[in-house]
Length: 482
Image (cartoon, rainbow, N blue to C red; front, side):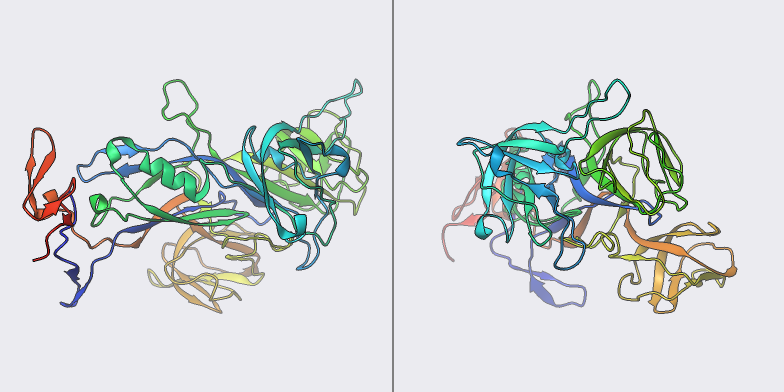
């Protein structure tokens, strides 16, 4: 199968001719949706796979591709960061260095990952590439049930230059292994059996909370309109599941800004802040009375309280704070939240992109397709055609809606609603069908013809016998000009 080299134009919808183009599909990886506004995912990691369906409707699935993880010091303002990442001079030897993180995010990486350490304030702006040889984010409990505090750290080799954490310093740590990013996507698709994709080009856009890959099917063997790639989010780690992979995962963060009745075995606040945590291991950083960080075991979750399995905490009093992190796996049933691709944003605004939280929301019932969520919003953030999640204080019309019209006075939505004239707080987020979605950016209009229309196909061998003046496996290369 191939593209006829003699034709370069195709008929368009209005009867004219336009140049043939190759198919372009965009893969977007983003955090799973939490409908409230109590926290956000600040880093992504894990594995995904892509499935390609060829011209004969045979499906081929890649080996696991790593999500391109990136972490940085938390921005508080445009020029001020929280001092979190460091490479102390006392840990540097001739062959290795130790990287420390008081926010315990290093578990988003894996042993033997290749990472790039870079940033305007690291090594005079010159990036260094190194390999992780050890990661230690473990914790111990004393006989009294109190955790031993210690920063999360990883050993890297070869050694890198020192870096002192400071509020005005910029540093990033990015995963750059050969199975991640645009290199990983290109490599895994081109390594599918039988050269079903001989060649593609991939362009990446990597942010703290998103990955985007634009895949162009540049080879004549993949000419024309292609089947959509399929992206697998969930883990595949049970016996018999192939290819074996981990789930796409996110690092969830929520801040306890004031404590109500926090004890040594709970974290509690009068305000809702803990809804989206899961039972299991999490990490506490930035506790007012403790300089270092600690791991905790969550045994029960409510909107205001995390109940812990032991006396992990130093008790908090009112107005004291703590930041809690937890790595969470995503599933194929999750919806994704479109954050806009935050490269570095203040902790107070990290999840704000593509999210609205008006305090004057009300619902107006009208004819089908004309129901309106009335509120003071930005018509530029969410536009007609977007899908939104809505979570309001009264929960009257909580759910997912297709926006048919966007105005500064609110959103006209499709679907049934119940009228509610009481002004209330609603959290409105722009969502996608999954944490990993594929969209057709450019529809392929080149031809996909048997032997490119310039040869005969042997049905027994599957090989083309090219006519005189044409060559190649698919006879798509012209050797004689007419």
